[in-house]
Length: 208
Image 1 (spheres, rainbow, N blue to C red):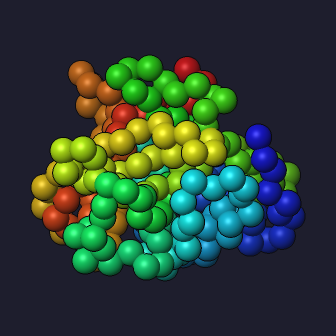
Image 2: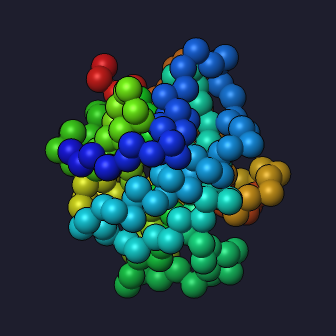
Image 3: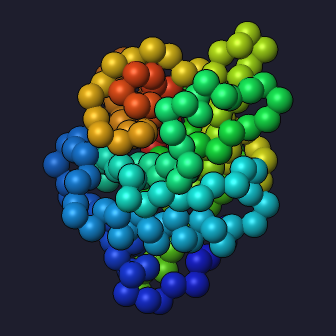
């Protein structure tokens, strides 16, 4: 587990985003300071070692959503553009961005990914500290020619590879994070691409 050295006010603000509690049900986080939060989270990610794919965080285009106290913050790569999807290949992973998960961990077929396979980052927010999961994201074709989102845990450990599917959703960001918790199915986090495609992967409440 790594601790970001951060006793500055801005890091306290970033921690505040992930510390947000007592929020009403599911809601997109549209706070005017989201860009500032995302900038610090993105900067924190650049201090990580053994990264699987080089991502240049674009804080201005970040999105965030929460379901009660569980939060997901999605930050795209600065060079992400719609035409990049057409250039994704099977030979290499194309940078997509990063996602921060608070009180959530990825799971596969109903089983949570083991802690030693996850990249846990602790943010010092002054009087309190918060640990979140940081997943770097990439795009790659599989053997069937389908585009997958490669979700990385610790190091180069791949914890999920959801397939990109056709899905229409109006929004003004290159990628938009979503969250769904149906009563009869596992909770999922989704990534919507340019309002035309979507990929989803399973998550579960951390520590339960």
